[in-house]
Length: 220
Ligand SMILES: NC(=O)c1ccc[n+]([C@@H]2O[C@H](COP(=O)([O-])OP(=O)(O)OC[C@H]3O[C@@H](n4cnc5c(N)ncnc54)[C@H](OP(=O)(O)O)[C@@H]3O)[C@@H](O)[C@H]2O)c1
Image (cartoon, rainbow, N blue to C red; front, side, top):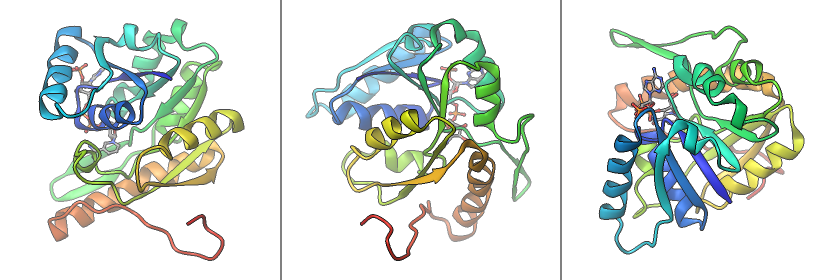
């Protein structure tokens, strides 16, 4: 599949991009500057020469022409970025991984975006795309480190069952990650907000936590 990532010059978008490229997808890293995206492509190819990474660079509009679009910008740029390339998103699956958070001193505070979550705000900005929220809790540095698998559960939610299935299958191609269906897009609000707790733990324990759920009948 051809996957375009908006805001892919940051650790989250580039980390996801490299994982999806290893899984065999054609990935376009998008940026407000195609030159900056090209620098990141060069860095990734230089870092992982043993992998034949199918990764190219474009501006965000070029990346939005792919089949499936990921939004990996900061939260307050997510829906404006989606709206700016909205003419290319009609009917497409749009995966939002953005968390609305602010750091105040030593505290991470979750924020409430206009529609309750970043993902719902993106859905409202481009009503006829199919927004899926996922990957909020996966530490970007680990995501970008191909030498090690990312031991993490990934919660996925959406109001579009077919789009959710597509994203669950896609994320399930990343080794070791376990994908869990978290329901409708209403769940994006608590999922996004919970990231503040993870960042607090990172700060206190000088680590990068990921989440793993336990329970009978969960997939292995
Ligand atoms: N970091 C993590 O561990 C992690 C994990 C899971 C989810 N997330 C979420 O994923 C998203 C990206 O995380 P990140 O750490 O990679 O973020 P980041 O480095 O702060 O930003 C990613 C990219 O977004 C673009 N950007 C910045 N401000 C923008 C604006 N005003 N308008 C349009 N584009 C803008 C920039 O690319 P250009 O300047 O090249 O356009 C930047 O490189 C965030 O919403 C975060 O909450 C992060």
